[in-house]
Amino acid sequence: MSTLLIKNGLVISENSQVMQDILIKDELFVELAPHIDPPENSKIINARGKWVFPGVIDPHTHMGIPIKKGHSADTFASGSRSALHGGVTTILDFSVLNAGQTLQESLGDRIELAGESLCDVGIHINITRFEPEILAEIPELIARGFSSFKVFTTYAEADMMLTYDQIEIVAGIIAQYNGVLMVHAEDNQVLSQALEPYMDRRESHPRFHGLSRPAEAELVAIDQLGEISNRTKCTIYIVHLNTAAGLAKAAEYPLLKVETCPHYLLLSDKMYERDDGQMFVASPPLRKQEDCEALWLGLQNGQVHTIGSDHCPFCLADKPRGLPFQDIPNGMGGVETLFPALLAQFVERGLHLELLVRLTSGNAARIFALDHLKGSIKPGQHADLLIVDPALAIKNWPSQLDTMLDWNAYTDFPARFPEMVIRRGEIVVHNDALTAPSPGMIIKAK
Ligand SMILES: [Zn+2]
Image (cartoon, rainbow, N blue to C red; front, side):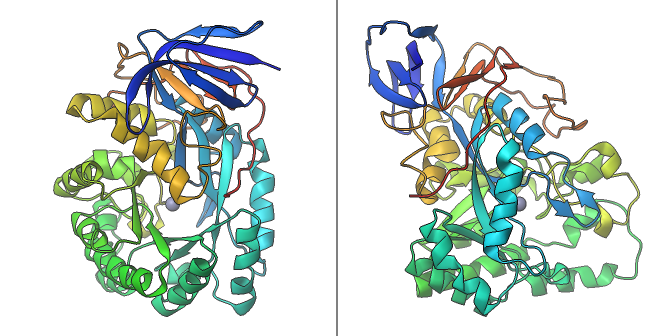
């Protein structure tokens, strides 16, 4: 049995900051108290003057997924390695439903791939086909502990879209079994109309990506989804919300939960004007500075519940300048900078660190029914935590954070990386180095 005692750290939870000792036995937290005497044979970590946060849960990653041409550049192995550097001890990724597959089969494939993850992994189930056999699988999957499902209101051309009527039926089933429906919320009709003028033009400037996916698409979709949540009583989680108007609309519906991403908080559509502007092409696109500011307000007034990275990175060679904007691979990385960049912003903006904990661990654990395992530093939970030295805010850090990626969107931002990360009782990062951790595990909802 291994025993770890963390002494005198300032433990930051969702509601308090208190100097406490933390006792870990094997994989679990066992005691939290102002003073704990070291048990025999325990390893002691002195955290005096340091911040101790719960391990970060990134509710939205896409490791190694197929896209139009190729794959997103991080595998579960490489992406989870860099995630740990940034304090992310749990990632929630998505299954990919291939032609002819059942949901169970798509989940099985994803679980196999996730076997090389060093983070613990939860899996959301993508429902990209509306068929009776597929719908019939939902109750069984929820019973197995896979209770979050994702649908798309667009991507009709990739055969991934469900209509609002179909989404309402799916939501009704999920609500009956206390699951969560996640939705990519951009209205397909609005997008089709906005894309129309560009169909016969070869535009390669990345700004056209933004112009072809207007903010109105989010507003229209969220309006529909809010009504569906009211009628079906289904909790609907809006992934990567990115507009001021969408946020205000979502706040009208009590059963909508809202996720945003670091890129929508920190980066505006001005990025498309840079020489490497194509690297910032992701869907939905970057918005106006006013939208960024509205999202920051939304974090503070409780209208935003989680922050996910939507980690789906590409290397420079994958996104060459000059492609027609419709052909630029969509997606950006950010699992490793999710917490360090946000923490630096919270400090600069004078925001409560307790709020950051709610947004980066507590809320995600509750929404996805993982709070019997994850999300806070308390006895009985998985011993996932990170230790940050408040004196260390760094700038101009290298873009390659132990990954195979050669580009990072956030290197101009200050970041506060953890000096130590512990995942299920194991020290996995110490002084910027990965310490050969054992593999992560698949986690299930309660
Ligand atoms: Zn995504």
